[in-house]
Image (cartoon, rainbow, N blue to C red; front, side, top):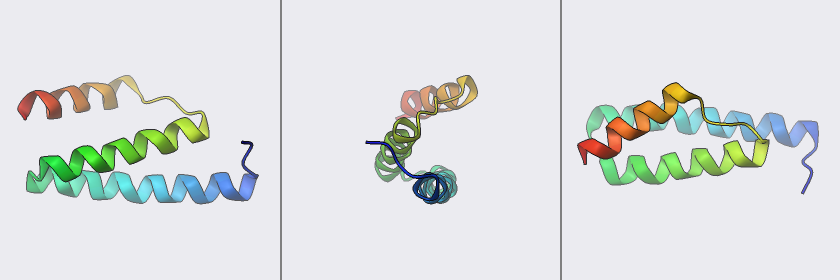
Length: 67
């Protein structure tokens, strides 16, 4: 499904808010919720056709290895 430019802007805004929430969940060490929020971020990235950066992948690996 092709999203309009306005939809893409809205999706990016939601994704960016989720990234802020993800950072806070990580800080609080609430791992299960952080994993779920991360999954939502990944879905939105895919919807936007944007890849996860190598640095974000390293952070995810560290987070999952810490569980």
